[in-house]
Length: 121
Image (cartoon, rainbow, N blue to C red; front, side, top):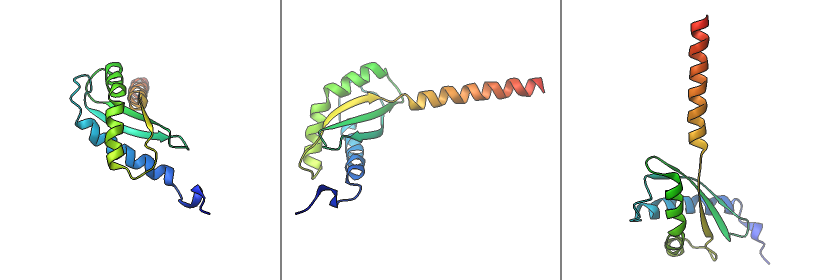
């Protein structure tokens, strides 16, 4: 009898493949709300039923883009069915990832603090 644990890091490999495939499939979407999207990460539940796709946006409105991606989730999932060789293709949930925004804000704050300190010295 084989156990599911027989394939090391399978979850990471599946998530990685989903990330690559979803990024390609998003490029084919015609929805004007979906701007220049970067897929930052994919988090897959242990049973592969759900995948949360974290994305950032170069141009466009994050709220509208997230809505557009979630409406297209079924279409994107169908594309994954054709590409992935796994029994269960997860239901996709798109979430805007604010990590890069926060990093930029922190960098600006640090630069401002350093320039203030340099003036005082």
